[in-house]
Image 1: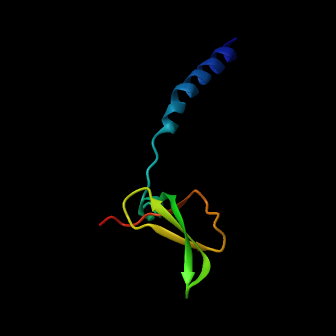
Image 2 (image 1 turned 180 degrees about the vertical axis):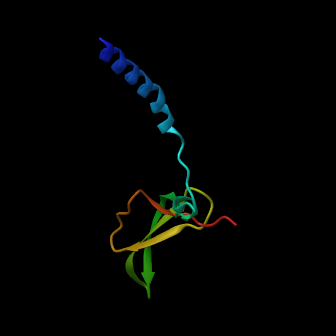
Image 3 (image 1 turned 135 degrees about the vertical axis):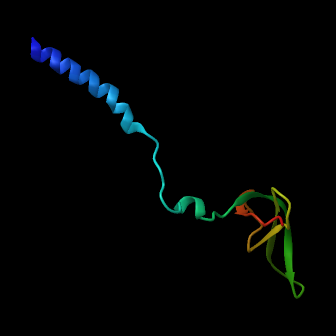
Length: 95
C-alpha cells in the first residue's frame, strides 16, 4: 500500500516538473538562417509573342513577359510560337 502512494507521488511530481524542460531555446552566436540572403522571385505573365527577324529572315519567336511588380519586361527567345503563360522570374532591385 505504501509503495502505491510513493509511486503515485513520484508520478505527480514528474508531471509537474516536466514543464521545466519545455523552456525556450537560445541561439548563441550568429544565426545562419538570418544572415543568409535569399533570392526573391515574382510572377512574370505572358504579354505578347512577336516574330524575331534577323537580316530580313524569320529567326524564331520572342516571348515577352510582363513582371508582376515594376520593372523591365522579360524577353525569352525560342524557335516555336508556343510560349508558357507565366513563370517565376528573379525580382529586380527597386532602389
